[in-house]
Image 1 (cartoon, rainbow, N blue to C red):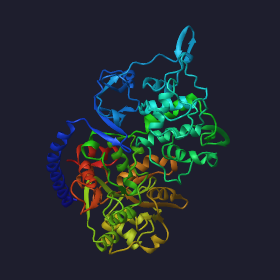
Image 2 (tube, rainbow, N blue to C red; image 1 turned 120 degrees about the vertical axis):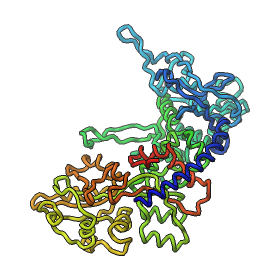
Image 3 (cartoon, rainbow, N blue to C red; image 1 turned 60 degrees about the vertical axis):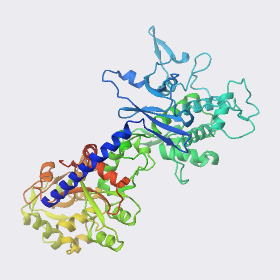
Image 4 (cartoon, rainbow, N blue to C red; image 1 turned 90 degrees about the vertical axis):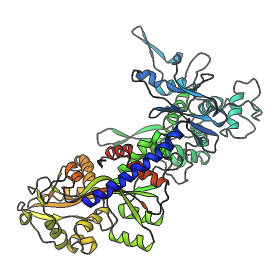
Length: 595
């Protein structure tokens, strides 16, 4: 632990020197307003530096939007993220100055004002209020919202083009859209940005179906680079998925399958959930006419959740241009989630955000093969993985980013408080003890559980107790009590508790995964666990950080040593050692390094 401490100190000092040089360059860049082309370049994401004043009311902050400075026109797709306001504008208007402004709330829709006890109350749904604030939804000539009325093509395309901020006065090329028609500009704009098909007629007063509005919204946000085109095999969690028309299927797979956005009809079933409430199933009814209220809700959700806004750190480190491909062990997935959360608003909709990690062994293999750029690892590679790397001519570079440790645990009822390293080795290598009373515990059967040999936890077992892989786990243990998953390493030990005759199990994992998993153990089983001291020292944040716990170690960022300087993977390692990166470590539930 002490020699590793010296190594990490050197790494941190070197990183700090690099940070000083890089900070000067980034400071010069940040002096210019930041922007980024989206999609095919037809739209631009712009950053407006703005810090919300401490005395600003919540109501005013909800009305904070990006506006064009010259005209005061609102930008529909705009949102606040970490001391800045972001706005998506058409590329043709990217040079126009923008500013952050608290926009005045529009008057309530006349049909949404209800009177009760002599007082008037605005019953407008939040989605409609928000779209009205952004200048998207304006009501009819009587100021009515009419949320339950079906929506026409002209009305729907008007809303969608206002969201995109697209305006065109060119001839749309439709036989039924002539100059002077109120929808003429809408038809021109929808045709110009590719969300309206090049048909002979615009059909302005035809009712729009749910499938059609899903397709419109999909095309609109895909053209702005905010929606990924689906691979084509995404399963839809809709009761009538098979009835979705082929022409609308891609839109449903993208919006519903990837982002959870969809207009649906809920139907209660006779089946009850764990709390006794009826379980509902959801249907698309794609050929059913969409209502104005349903379209408002869909657009409001799209504006809120589809744009991915970068933090200042993401811009400074170049992660807006490219994120490294990340993998890791099951226990280190919280790092990836915390990292993306620190770098991007709506991070889980980022095109590169991984839904999960591979297992430890597999993730190392993917790094060795070049399939991924960087890992978050709870353990050093096993001897088998080191041999694979040598055979591939790959050298792995491990950069410590957090404290962690190998820990052993048993059933809470067990009065044994700890073991020595020698006793642990005798248990797992020699299968030397059948009863806890042989190692200072109660008269109870001792049931050792181990992990599968391609797990990260087994790599720790190799390091501390198997002499770097020269020894093996006892065959009797391998034939019986093997926990194949991180979570089952805990639940298997918990479930092994016996009272007649008495039997207690022992298992192992990593400290911070154990802590995080323990908070959920009560939802899985009534049987609880406790940590065992090793050589008289109990594992804790303090004993792991100061090295007095004998099995203390680190979590790592792992990359290939030939990774170029300044690459996204190198930048990620640099970020994780920064103050903000160490906050990610803490937010992920791990032990940040003391720098």
